[in-house]
Amino acid sequence: MASNWAASALNWWQEAGVDVIVGETPRDWLSAKAKAAPAEAPPVPAALPDTLTGFNDWLATTADLPFAAPSARRAAPVGDPDSGLMVLVDMPSPEGGLLAGEAGALFDKMLVAIGRSRETIYLASLSPIRTPTGIIDDKYLTRLGDVARHHIGLVAPKTLLVFGDFGGKALVGAPVAGARGKWHEIATEKGPIKTLVTIKPEKLNEMPGIKKLAWADLQMLMEELK
Image 1 (spheres, helix red, strand yellow):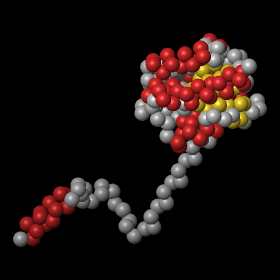
Image 2 (cartoon, helix red, strand yellow; image 1 turned 90 degrees about the horizontal axis):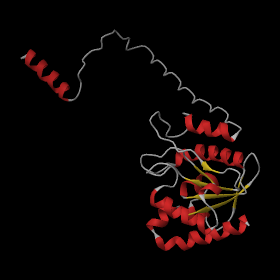
Image 3 (tube, rainbow, N blue to C red; image 1 turned 90 degrees about the vertical axis):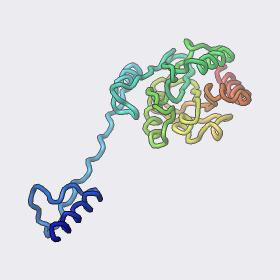
Image 4 (tube, rainbow, N blue to C red; image 1 turned 180 degrees about the vertical axis):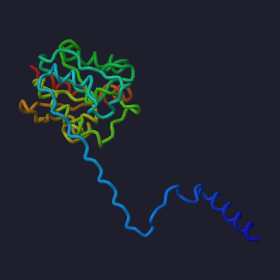
């Protein structure tokens, strides 16, 4: 009976998920518990390069960015940094590169409407790496905003056009709905940069009825660029 009772008890514990009855090494159960080792402080990010060429090389290779991984594709900034107009999107397009596909085609039309082309602007992204979901969690925006602010300072454009909620929240503290239709100033190491936040082309393609809002923003931009 005793052996049957013991076997029954062992089977009960095994079904409950206990698969090791005793440890392999002796333990003094009456001794004070050992203190857990303190967590290591996260590494302090290295200073960002102070030239645009060096910074863009850093963007292409650094592991000190959200979403950085050996297999992650990155999109480099393109265009003319001396053009006076910098355009910042949130991340690369699903097709690769910055503002590609249907959104890119609409963006090109928007540029023509203000007398510009991709060759006569400087186009960059808040994150050079596209997230798997196409969404940037708020917890990453501070770091990405700091990096973007340094980038903007190196370019020192006359005006900055920011597309979308993520860039708006990272740089002026508000999504498009609360930021568009008015000028902002972004503090950089080279001084304040006049900034306009507007609706990104992807959203305009999804909701054609709000294109008039983006056009009003572009008219403000044209006035400033004169």
